[in-house]
Length: 482
Image (cartoon, rainbow, N blue to C red; front, side, top):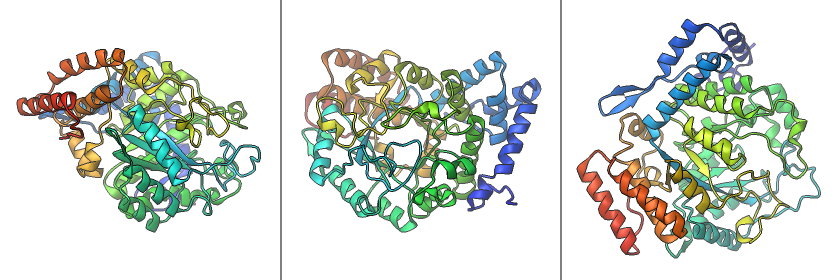
């Protein structure tokens, strides 16, 4: 039997079933052990250090104890600390992005996804480069600067060359004042050589959802196709980092397997990346199974309610304090609103999950990967964020200045958010307001920027940011960054 070893490169050793089961038993046995729980909560708190803060994070076992605890007063403390950590390292900024679906051709048999090979009535579509360009212009006209590209796994229809061509096209489109400045990639597990090619193409984060860490369930849920290979899929992030990609993003599809098992596996994967590569996941996404073309989420009997979902999110924030956390338009406005407070730092806005959906006036449903619960426009999402005290950020500066991987983590830990990310957020928000926002959103936004400028600690940085904001308002000059 495989032994647990977070520094191993073998999936069965760093995501070790026996270790997870022992962790869950330990968590259940100690879920009301208040002295231990208090000790874990104190360990999780951010600690002031110089101009910044540090956080120790939690082990998968410690975090699992908090998740298992059913005492309401402990849950409230978890939520409070999650909010403290979020504000300490990310401030009140929320990064905005949109998914761009390139192709729904897929050779896999995933039971939870409508793109599975056996679905013969869903229209199959793959964007040409001209269509990619049209989609990008539509996204730029909404105000987006950051995309996450998505494609099914199909070596004939969606080879790596097609993905690279699409990335090149996306970066080449300059429409009015619009630019896509960062392309994150969510495609199937691939080779070190292909990850190198993605790195050379200038991608941001490579994102790959594990779906489930429970190997037996994984094999049943992926009965056919290359994705059936659990080990190859689970070890993908190590190949990506070997290929030079600094920033990788993890995630499971909550609802496929028992959530406590998935949670422990997710934190163990983060620990593994830290142990082997010296830096944890750049992002962690928290999607839940949703209705889609021929997919009924009630067919999966491990669904989680909104309260459990919120607690999972908060516990991830305590365990992996420096990671970016992503929530998509799968979730309703109400759910997204609560999770923003508990640790989420990135949201999608105005999303369409169909191939070619952005160029169509009416939201198409025939090629959607999942139902979109939050169907508001980007402008509505931006205004909603600001009305709730969040700064919508279209910033991509860290990636383009080489502040990725451990360099980003260093910036985060050293408390430079207010002197770097904060002014960058305000400048990119100004771009959005000037170029794309409705009058109502402009009014809210410019008031927020005026107040938020005052929070920049360094006089010189504040003065430069204020000058740049005036230049954006009064000219076509764009893309200022610290």
